[in-house]
Length: 288
Ligand SMILES: Cc1cc2nc3c(=O)[nH]c(=O)nc-3n(C[C@H](O)[C@H](O)[C@H](O)COP(=O)(O)OP(=O)(O)OC[C@H]3O[C@@H](n4cnc5c(N)ncnc54)[C@H](O)[C@@H]3O)c2cc1C
Image (cartoon, rainbow, N blue to C red; front, side, top):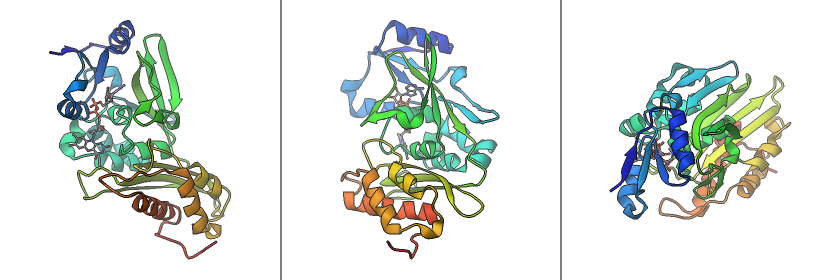
């Protein structure tokens, strides 16, 4: 028998967590946890802390610099939000391919991130947009770049007593273009074999001024592509050698072989998608 606690506000939730570190299992939309609790009953906690009713963790606010999204905001609300669709279309797209509408109605963005699956669908987009996380503790809160959140397979930077309270995403640079793609076995309701988001910024002369990538299902955690980004910086599109990009993709990712895919397939698809994100088409003619 488990005990279910439903705090009325965020300070109450944080007090409970601080008073009994590691004792509660936080539950938000429950779409990951209910499956886990069925498949692995031995991991069923004694104490649940249900944060789904906390108003402080709900909703989206536009600021001058970007958007703040409460951690317990559902993917359904996010994907239909007019400002998200206009300014952060890759997030609207990733929320729309996370499971199907019944899941999106309950699933939260915070839950997707904190569940820390290497295949989480919204992770690549948050990495490409350069998101930051607001992490709350009963002593106060701290900010963390999302790229520092995943510290190993299913291991996050959250400490005992902490909750993810919000995600903050800056406006994309003016002359930037985004690219998002999820490759799965089916068009819907599939766990990604590979997924990618990219935000590429070019100046008026076609020179790349910034290139940020996020990928999922290609390593133990969602990851960025630091060597690819570094190679692209300051180069014009016509000067980019596809072989160089492919080589750097190989350095930046470490795909595994599992029931969904082979290592070789993931590596090949990842390289093709990165090239498509850069050129806006599958592959350029230029070789090394
Ligand atoms: C049928 C089905 C299809 C799915 N399809 C996809 C898919 O296509 N792509 C995909 O990425 N996922 C998919 N999922 C997984 C799941 O729906 C998402 O990961 C979802 O976003 C999890 O959010 P949640 O609010 O339900 O999390 P929960 O199940 O409530 O929690 C997940 C984890 O995060 C922790 N947590 C939640 N919120 C917080 C917080 N604010 N602070 C600290 N810790 C927190 C919980 O303790 C738990 O460890 C699917 C699940 C199902 C059942």
